[in-house]
Structures are given as structure tokens and as C-alpha cells.
Length: 451
Ligand code: ADP
Image (cartoon, rainbow, N blue to C red):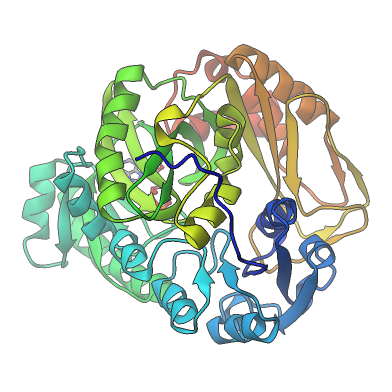
């Protein structure tokens, strides 16, 4: 059933359990919705932009994330103390932590995200693969959980080398190992499992066939928690360095209407039956017309603005409405996607103080960031300091716009990847749109030589 009635939330105050650009992003939408915001911050972030922008701000601990942004009890206390009605987890940190979502719910607050049971199911990649299979989605050929010396070699041989060992609880491109020969498998399973245990407190690993140069394609999902599921088209995140995304765009130059429809045909009933709530992403690897389910990220993603540009929908607004009212302002069957949008992640190679900042502007240009003149980038957190996003009526124009916006962007005082992004955006292969996830590694030498 369509839910195009104007949804209204009674929520008055939201605490944002995050920092940096995503905290700023959430504050902006809250303000437009008339919702007050509470920022939390570590001592290293006392002058961070999100602290200045929020209606209230509470220090939750020292610089290391484990003692601040990952400290569930401190964040909950801050929310209770400020009489917040809900907590928005942003991306990273506690955003896919089922225990945190449960703690928030058990204390009578609203978690802006799916239910903890759903986060748990989707957060385990082995279980998520099984769930996707149930809805007829092709998954990357692979195994269930494996143990080093118990038939894993046989299973990997069946898949055919190379294979990739992945952590069931993995994320952020961490803990993956590519294995090209049977004799290297056992040792790598042991190492991967140890790494997984150390990073994600769960040593479960599984094996997938390693696709040599696929595209990374994902669907943006918005769901109201009552079975209404909207797909805001796909994003292409094929430009990656060490499995981490650098540039994203929508639509994908490698996805046909047929593929898009087939992906959505599996994703919609899957998210509907899970009673999925809020924003989520279903990720696939694609080789030509073939695509394989990889995982679900049960939260908003860094690259969501490209989907906002092509759909005209504020994803954070609909996410908040879905999670606080059970309905959204959009009609899933009437999502109109138009034009082409590209995002460049701007990463800092060094911490430091911004001595000069010039932000690009003009029609179809968006700059999501926590930078301001004179601000300090602490060394403790993610290296991404900004996202530059452009929109135009077609990909060719969007590329020209990104080039001119990157030329306008000036960030001094720290070293950034702006020059690299210019190089990629202007590369003939990127213009053609025919490339895979290993393309960036191929051109890195050219980039370093400044050619
Ligand atoms: P994470 O959750 O850590 O981000 P993902 O499972 O989303 O990990 O994978 C991240 C990236 O790793 C993918 O976009 C892709 O480049 C690479 N990758 C993952 N699985 C495979 C595979 N089976 N074959 C080839 N590349 C893969």
C-alpha cells in the first residue's frame, strides 16, 4: 500500500551518536524538520562543526573512539540527560551494533534504524547470504562458515581459485584475504579468523569465489517498517582503493534496466518481509549482466547524497519519519529518477589545521563536510573530511561539473586526495565507464607519477 500521506513525527529532540560530516548532515535535516539536536563529542572534537551546530552538546569522553563514540552507556546517559526522544547513529561507530540498538530501545528511546533483530541477521554476512538466496537473489558463489582444517580446502577447490576469505561480521573493507593457491588456504583461514576475532569480536569466516574485476553496484532502500519498500535506484562504487570506496555515482554506467529491475525484484520482498525500517543498502558485485548479492548495510551510507540528487528525496528525513512514525512521505511505486550524480570522497592524508578553505558552488554542486577555516583535524578518526557531490542532466555534464568543482575546491593546511580525484574524473577510462574494482590499483602508478 502506498504511504504518500504526509507523515508527521512527534519526536522533539534527537541525539546524534556520531561526529564529523555525517553528524552535520543529520543536524541539517533535523533543523528543517523542526527537531532539536544534541551532539556528543570527544575531548579531541570540542571545536568540531557538529558541536557548534547542534542545539546542545555533551562531552562523552577522551579522544580514542573506544572511550567515547563507541561507549554505549555514555551515549545513552547523554540522551537521557538531555531528554532526547531518539538516537541517530550516523554511519560507522555504533550504527550497525545490534546491542546498542537494543539498549536504546530497552531504555524507551527510539533508535533511528532497523530493529536490533534485523541488524543482527543482516550484520552476519553468512546469514544475510542465506536470506538473500531465499528471495531468489543470486549470491556470490561461496561457503557457509568455515574452519581451517575441516574440509575448507575441498570447498574452496569446488569454488575454484582464486577465493576470498571474509569475516562474517566484517565491515569497512577490513579483514579480507585473497588466496590464489590451495596450499595457502589453511594458514590464511587461521589468520583471517584471528583478525576477525580481534576486530569484530567474532572469528567466524567464510569463503567466496574471488571475482577478478567486477563492478560494485548497490541499491538504496527506504522502508517504513510496515512492509512498504522504496528503491531509489542504484549507485556504482567501483572506484575503490584497498576495497574502500573513493568515487560513487548514480546511475551506474554498467547497469541495464533489466539488471536494475531484477535486483529490485529480489530486494523488495526481502526488505518487506524483514519489516525493515529506515535507510539501508543492498550491495552486489556485477560482471557484465550478471550480478551477485554481497551484503546489506543496515544504515545510511556515506554515498547516499548521489541517490538524493537523482531522486530528489532527503533520505535522512524519510529515515527519521519511518523510524519514528512507521510511515514515509514517498510512494514506493512513484520514485522518479532523473539525471546523473557523482560523489568524490575527499580524504586527508595528514591531520592538521585548515589554513585556507574555498568551497565550490553553483547549480548542482553540494559540499558535505565538517571543515571550516581554522578548524583542526584530529588524528584519531576516519580520514574522510568532505564529500563533493554534483548533479546534472546526464553523465557527461556531471563529469564536466565535477572537474570544475574539484578545481574550485581549495583545502590548505593538510594533505588531501583532491589531485588524485581530478586525475580519475578526467581519465578516459572513467569517462567510458567500462572498468572494475581493480582499475584504481592499475592506474595508481600513473597517478603517483602525476601523468
Ligand atoms: P565490507 O563490508 O568490509 O565493506 P564487502 O563485503 O562490502 O566488505 O566488500 C567490499 C569490497 O571488497 C567489494 O566492493 C569488492 O571490491 C571486494 N570484494 C568483496 N567480496 C569480493 C569477491 N567475492 N570478489 C571480488 N571482490 C570482492
